[in-house]
Image 1 (cartoon, rainbow, N blue to C red):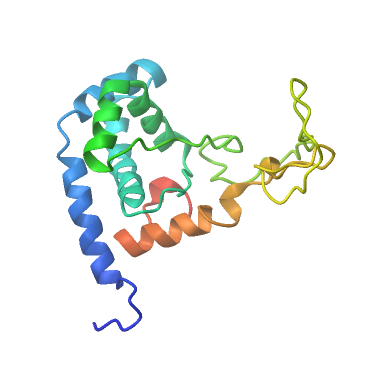
Image 2: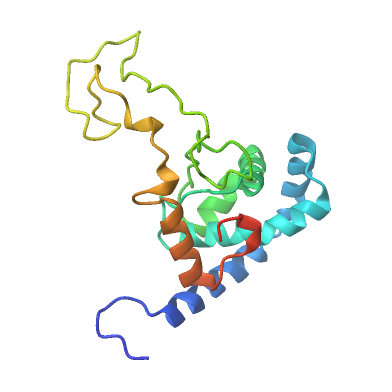
Length: 188
């Protein structure tokens, strides 16, 4: 397929993703991460082996340049946490594959794997953007970085349903790179 837009074609994206994924799968320390997942989260080796390919696909999406992609599954997120907890191996992995640390932005909205990144059923009261330690002068609340101390924060909005890095973006990136999204994610 000829692509005149300068954007990668789906076939090129999938080929690139498969190359990265193969390298990730060959990383020799997954056997250590399974032990951390078992110890810290009670994840059985069998469950780990079911979830691992999807965690590896998630990492592939990040390595394709999607640094803000959302983690939309609590069980797969536990693998990421287990990986991070083995700090030496996580740092080695990140430096080897990306050249810098892959930082985890916690999904504070994720309640359980059945929630699939949706907002909690019980509405949460809005937080006020002020710090008791250091009061800030009023600013416009255009982003979480520049809050107005009297307006509700954007932090309480569920990032997985909107905007850059949200659930729809994740699904689109996943399908472009790998085809139909795995049912393990619970996002169909």
